[in-house]
Structure formats: C-alpha cells, structure tokens
Length: 213
Ligand code: 3DU
Image (cartoon, rainbow, N blue to C red):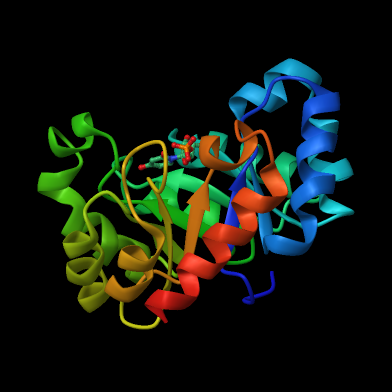
C-alpha cells in the first residue's frame, strides 16, 4: 500500500452501488480501502477482489479464534486479494502467529479500541497487545485516534511497526493529532462516505494529515 495521503477509507456501506460510488470519488485521495463485515455481508466476499483491483484492501474482520480457524480465515481472505488483515490479540500469541504466518506478515493487531467501551477491557491490556504484535511478527497495530496520547505510548512499545488509527471524524478524533502522536495512517469511514461530497471530505482529511507531519 502506498504511503502518500495516509488516509485509509473504511468502506462500511451496505450496497455495491454505494461502495463503487464512494471509491470512485475518493480513489485518488486515499491509500487503501478497509473492508469490514457490513459490506462483506451485504454484497458478498468477492467485493474484496473487486476493490483490490482499485486500491490495496485491508480486511477488518477482527479475526479472533483458535490458530487453525484463524489460519483458514486468513488464507481465504488473502486468496480473495486482500493485502492485509486485522486480528484481535486477546486470543493469544499462537492465534496471532497463525494469522501472521498465513498472511505473510501482513497483519495489524487491534490494541486499545477507539470507542468509549474500548477503555473497559482493551485499554488495560493494550500495552501487552502491542508487545504481542511485535513479538509475533505483525506488520503493525490498530490504535485509537480518539486518544492520541495512547498512540504515543503504544509507539514506544512497537518501535518501527506501523500504526493505523481509527476514530477520526464521527468518533471525535482529529487527523493531525493522530499523525503527530505517531500514527502512520488514519482510518476514516462515516466522515467520508456519509458526506454529500466524499471526494472533498477525503481531500480535507489528507490536508489535515499534512498538518501533523
Ligand atoms: O468511525 P468511522 O465511521 O470513521 O469508522 C471507523 C472504522 O474503523 C470502522 O470500520 C470500525 O469498525 C473500525 N475500527 C474502529 O472504529 C475502532 C477500532 O478500535 C478498530 C476498528
């Protein structure tokens, strides 16, 4: 995936026509497309391959199972053209390693989640989850733009691994704050796809990112 705009589109729409409309509008202003369950369930998993022809696709199924099942899920996802997957780390080192092996290292591990409930169970163990991402050979972590100070903390643990950061826009986070704190990319969904002008929204976010570099 490119590292130019540093914006990853969270494509959580539920129709093929909306997906194509939004992606056509913003394709020159984002570096990757993140696909999650809403779109996969609405239109089918072949949307991964279709979108991968346009941009790098990160599949965010937040995989959280035993190693063998994780491996099977990741193999199927990568075979459909995904460039990377997102998994949970609370399942333990063997489960994360199964994802890393099946994805050739292209795995992001969820640490502290960005929503208010993320403080309840994920925040207390986020440092350990970040350490696990590193020791398991993952590509990076998912860390909250809603709490930029936590991005800085987690950056110290993972060193040069990548940080992709959701929570900008609809969840209240700010793009430049997240980048300044150490995020490599911001992940943005509603602030782009619910905008009357998704292209303009993506361009504004890319400009906001630049302020944090
Ligand atoms: O709030 P938005 O509409 O910009 O969407 C954020 C996306 O990032 C969405 O797909 C969600 O599932 C994902 N995500 C988080 O929001 C928070 C996390 O901690 C991890 C993933």
